[in-house]
Each structure stands twice: as C-alpha cells, then as structure tokens.
Image 1 (tube, one colour):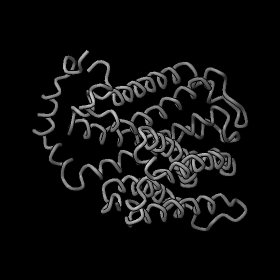
Image 2 (cartoon, rainbow over the protein chains, first blue to last red; image 1 turned 180 degrees about the vertical axis):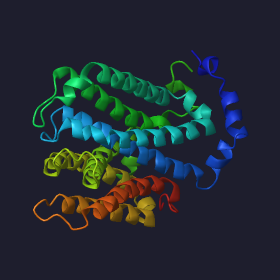
Image 3 (tube, one colour; image 1 turned 90 degrees about the vertical axis):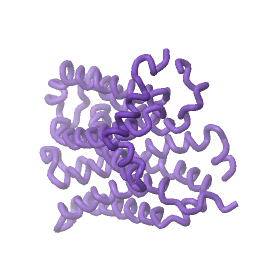
Image 4 (cartoon, one colour; image 1 turned 180 degrees about the horizontal axis):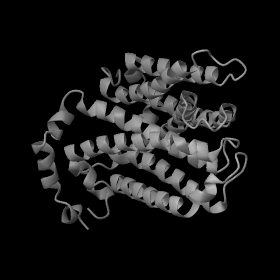
Amino acid sequence: MDADHLINVAAVAKWGRDVGIYDLMTSRWGWPIAECFHFIGLCLLFAAVGLFDLRMLGVARGVQLRALHRLIPFGLAGFAISITTGFLFVMTTPDQYLHNPAFLLKLSFMLLAGVNMVLFYVVAARTVWLTGEEDLPPLRARVFGAVSLLCWLGVMTCGRVITAYRPPAYFWCPWC
Amino acid sequence: MSVWAREDQYAYFVALIFHAWGMALLVGGGIVIALRVLGAGKAAALPKFRGFIPVMWAGAALAIPSGLVLLVAYPAKALTNPIFAIKFACLIGAAWLVRRLMRIDAPPRNSRGLAALCLLLWLGGVAAGKLLLHTYRILTVT
C-alpha cells in the first residue's frame, strides 16, 4: 500500500509552504533549533515516564511511586515540545517521513505507548498508589511499565534510524 | 577503525542508537533528581533517589563507549568544534552538581538554585550534542 493513497503528500508539502513552516525550518537555524528542542522534550519525557516505569520494575525501591508520579506533568510538557517540533519536521519535508518505514514504526510505538498508558490508568494505577514505598507494585502494573519503557526506547531507536531509511531508498520500504 | 565506524553499513547507526539510550538514562536520572530537589514529588524522601544513580551509571556505560565510536568516526568534525567542549562542560558540570545535591549529610545551602542550574546543564548538554550535527566546519581531514 502506498502512503500516497492514504495521505496526499504533495498537498501536505504545499500546506507546509503556504503557512510558512517550510521557510521557518529551512532558515539557517530553524531546523537545528527545532532539533535541540525535540531532544530536550524527549529527555523530559523519558526522565518522568521512563524512570517511573523503572521504579515500577523495582529500580530505586524506597522512592514512593505516588510521589514520583508528581513528575509526570514534566514528561507531558516534554511530550508537547517533541510533538510540536516533530510536526514541524514532517510538515517541512513530508515525503522524507510519510514514506519512511522507520518513521511509521516510530508512530506505531507512540500509539502503542498511548494505548498502554490509558490501560495503565484504567486497570492498574489504583494499585500503584497503594504500593508501599519499599515494595514492588502488582505484576500487571509492572507489565504496563515494561511495555511503556520498551515503547519509548523503540521510539528513540526508530528516530535515530529515520535518516537511514530516507527516500529515495524505496527498496527499504515494502509498501512503497 | 575510523573508516570502519564511518563506512560500515551498521556500525555508525548502532553507535547512535546506544548513545541515545545511554544519554536518555543518564540525563533522565539527572533530571529526576534535579526536579525532586526543586520540590516535585516531595513526599518521596530525597536520599531514596540515590537508587537512580545506578541508572545514570548504566546510561554512562552505554553512552561513553558509543560516543567514542562516533568520535572516532569523525574525529576532526567534533574536536574542531567549540560546541563539543561546551557539551562536555555542561555534562560534567551537571554530573558534579548531582553528586553535590545528593550529599545528604552536608546539603548545599542554595540547593534549589543548584538544582535549577543542574537541570539547565543537562538539557544544555543534550542541545549542544544535537547542535554538533549542524555546526561543524570540518567533516574529515583527508
């Protein structure tokens, strides 16, 4: 299946130019500064979410999970920074991303992390608030933590190899 | 070895991936400790956050060797760039501040100010690392 059948890549590129994102991002410092903020956002996200996951898996016992969860808003702020700058990258050169298997896999990991997060709050969060500060949370909470951690490491991994799978290397991409 | 790191189909990207994981763990641990000293999650006792120090060591153990591979691949690119020195100044300063903040027996007087500085240095070090890609003057000597 061709991504063009789902999304009109040319129209996205035109929109990016029309609203000025293209000019902003192709200016001397536009793209580099956006990349810096993309990584700063990711660091905040991983700090808050990744280390909460690690605590659920038994790292740093003694840190009360309920208290550690108060850092999650910083992770959300980081996520907002990374999503915004990521959106700017994609709108500047949509053909480099929408045909790119590494980028599509990265989005899949983010979607899985999102579903995992919702299920965590519905199914397991209450048991985590009641977990003693030296204790492990119940198994199902630990599974959510492990999935979350793997998803975000997967997001980073895919992000790092996006440049390796860039079109016109169409032979990388089974559906292009 | 430099040529291998630069031209092998996988070596450079494998090093990039490990560098990203390592930095995420190292900087992630540093950010959490800095935020805690700044007052987030106060209900958890600060000394218990020492448990995240091994996470930071694990991150350093991943990031430093992979960083050396990246450096060996393009030594002239990084070593001629003042941003590279800034990156290390930020990261070493941030790591030193984490050590200082976690000395529970003798907490620094202005711990919140130092924690804010520590947070800025971690994020500044990451931003400087990213800027290396865009600010080099010399890619390879030969």
